[in-house]
Image (cartoon, rainbow, N blue to C red; front, side, top):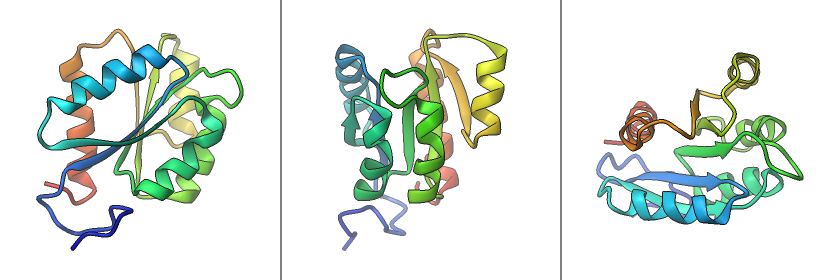
Length: 138
């Protein structure tokens, strides 16, 4: 039986996703969209980077969808704590800002991908699946 924090080698278990974004409506939309995907489960969500690492560790996230710009602790500031708390979790930096220097900063800081919020839903889901599978799921 899998543990509560997702540390299971069960390849049939869903990809465990944590969403961290300061926009409540966007979190709700992402949660609703992911709920339509049978192989993806949103296990937690937070409104700022200050809670991200704790949520990722507590819920055993495979993938984190992390907003780049948040009011207290930015995604870039939260990224090292997330990687320290759960190194195997993939982090997709999800940003409303399209800027080469921010993308480079995110990738240099350990993000696995950088996607603008304007990308098609299929692109975000595809990346979540790619990283979830790469971490031993499915």
